[in-house]
Length: 161
Image 1 (tube, rainbow, N blue to C red):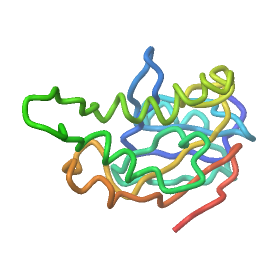
Image 2: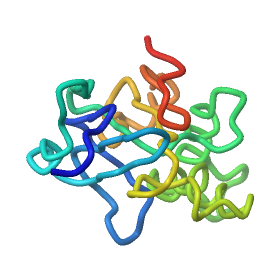
Image 3: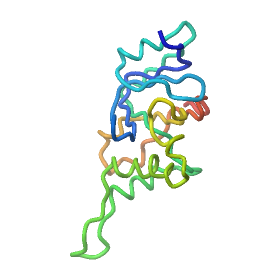
Image 4: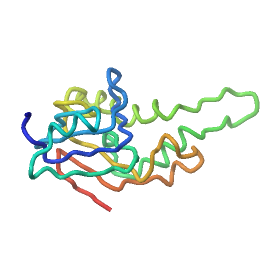
């Protein structure tokens, strides 16, 4: 059995921002690092007597927004809902996945921290946010209403609604 995790977040729609493993349903955290990303059944291997189990209830778990001292959801909404300012101009709306990658993985790359944070994969910092909804099923017009219900930084819960 691996070293028990401090936290296991399960029953989540995990957006990893990792091209090799873009989606999962559970994440285990030991100390300040992610130790497991995968299925809920396999996450049980990381469970110990003091492991805190967090049931995400189908909501989105994703890497934390990098350098975001403000609410990033209006920016996400703008990227998804952008309209041409004049008729006949091209549509420059982004996809949700591309927008989230820009706020997470690409932002870590811009800081030369891509091997430290910005994705949910084993060995990287456990900086992540659990959102109020499954962001992939929310209509794009309402995406700015999605909000964090839990934030982890370096494996510590720093916000919990």
